[in-house]
Amino acid sequence: MSYIGKWKFHSIGTVDDETYERVWLNGEEYMNSPMPYIDETDEKSVADEMKERKKTVGMLLEVCEDGNLYVLMPLPEGVSKEEIEAAVEAGVIKVRDGMMTDDPFIWEERDGELWVKMGRTDDFMQFSGDDEFLTMVTTRFERLQ
Image (cartoon, rainbow, N blue to C red; front, side, top):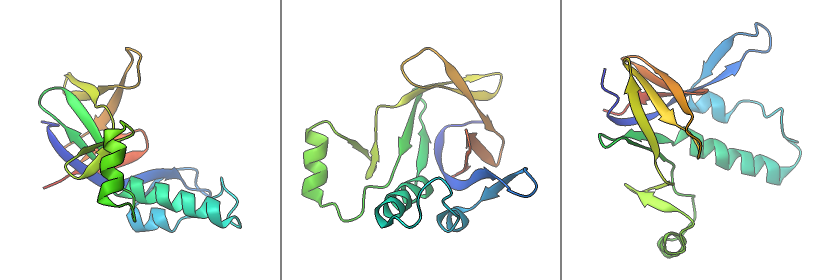
């Protein structure tokens, strides 16, 4: 299987409170799911969490032939083109294909599996994949057609 190409968010894995088994939430389910790790009476915390969830649901992975893997996130809502250009100029963010990104990760294929160098160490992490999905930790992606 070739991992080359773009992969869009499909679902996020969480543990069911009753069965303790992994369940996959699609974007809408994830956006509407409880937030047990924040104070849901704090409007700012809820708004910040919703911004993060929107970024996650809008995320793409781009696996390039040159061995680079980009995590692409939607640009924040309400930010002007000028503000984005200033952030790029200042080195705060990078933009690729109209989406926000950072330095790419290095990837390699080992025995048909995708391995990605995470962080500044030499440690690689295995992403699980098949013809349908590519899973990075708890986030599942599907090939963008």
